[in-house]
Length: 62
Image (cartoon, rainbow, N blue to C red; front, side, top):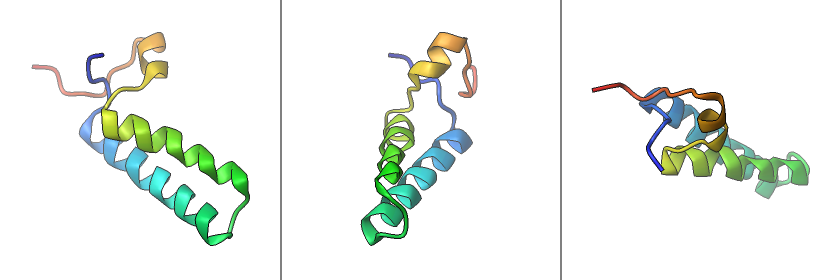
């Protein structure tokens, strides 16, 4: 698994994941908010399976 999620992309994914999970825990939105686990995990691990399938990469190239 090579990293394919860049810095800005990673920050946005983690923020979105935390916001969705927080809203679900507080009861502001329904159980569908647990989908926030997906962007949170892809941001933490810096790997997105969908990016691999589509051939995308937002990491800087050396």
